[in-house]
Image 1 (cartoon, rainbow, N blue to C red):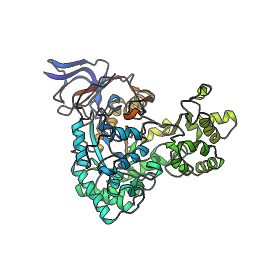
Image 2 (tube, rainbow, N blue to C red):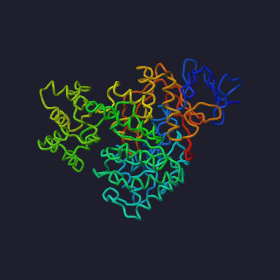
Image 3 (cartoon, one colour):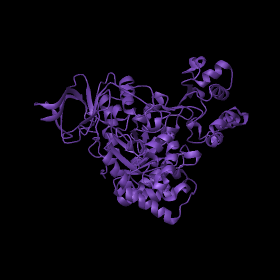
Image 4 (spheres, rainbow, N blue to C red):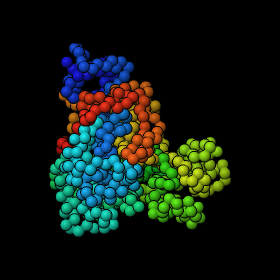
Length: 562
């Protein structure tokens, strides 16, 4: 008897070949037959009119802390994700000596936009080493298959403590210890090594995240462990310092694939040609036999924020004072003519890698606090300034001050033009991912990137066929990160499945949920058109809610292709 038969679905196998209307049978977590399936099953579904595809493979998430209290890793399974990679950009929580736990969480709370009290309340510390963390994940039983990066900032903090954010050059002993910790992580199943040189990556109180001040020599010494081990992938939030030339050089030295993640690769109307240069440099590297790719977002980069926590603006020098100011001091600072003029000057000459470049059409009023301001919701700051004949900088701060800084704003800074974004999605050096799921919870939720891709780029705009769109979300990312057996529907492979309606699949707008430990609030998205998600043959979401499992079916991935 089969455990599951899904009958009459349009089956996309993940390789890009056209769909076939067939049955799919599952037993003991694996696909056992594709075609006409006879005989009984413990669970049988008539999927007439629906499509069946491999579960979405999300290469860029930040569930490192959340998974210790939430095995579902929500909202990703509800949004079709069955495999996730955590520890991106070198931010995570393992290894972490016990005395440094608060330091680690404080930095993580800022750089990844997480509620600090939720982290302090929720993280279940049953580990100090990377291997112990992997063992804890196995005991937890995540709902999705989970791979973990060895992280540069994590390891720097574990070795150097708080000095990791201040001391540029480690001692020789410290560097050797960091190399040993990367080796240890790789020996315990890390998928690779991740780091960040991004100027947007600040830690608690505005201090730099440890890896962002490290030298190129230190980065090469740690990434070099991948070449020494002849395994693993290298992921880098590059900023402007880790240029494509630097990245290709590291790929060439190590013989391991490298992945660039930076807003500089996203479409930006202020410099529309910039992102394309990154893709072409990667294409040139690929032609030379060096595997260098861009982790590519298919969604507008949008952030919900308030001026009590203006995360998206902190990279501007004018906001250095905001980073250290008390909440009570913020109104006076924002009223200051000197502060406003300093911010205007920053916008006239924005630094590389900055999120907001000064186009006030890309910031709109979100949720307002006062009834008389409700009509402003959805209006851009530029439109409001034009209506009032005022400078948009003044309109922006004055509106927030009139509501005791409670006004929510929505910034749509990059990837906000389909004609500009489509070429990057179609480029051979792109890998579609970059959800940041689990992070920036107070501002955004891009965990549904795969469903958005199926809705917007496949169905609504027709830039991709459904078969090709499925391939870009499943087998391709799995292959790029050397994840075996995932992203394909084939007999003998694990049954990671997403059943959906192509006509209605999509995601909701960001929705607030007060469900974090300690009562913290986050933004989530809900799926439309999803009829079921299975991981290793076990249903984890039925399209409406999670299926309760005391131990999730996801595997902790620790073996990867070379």
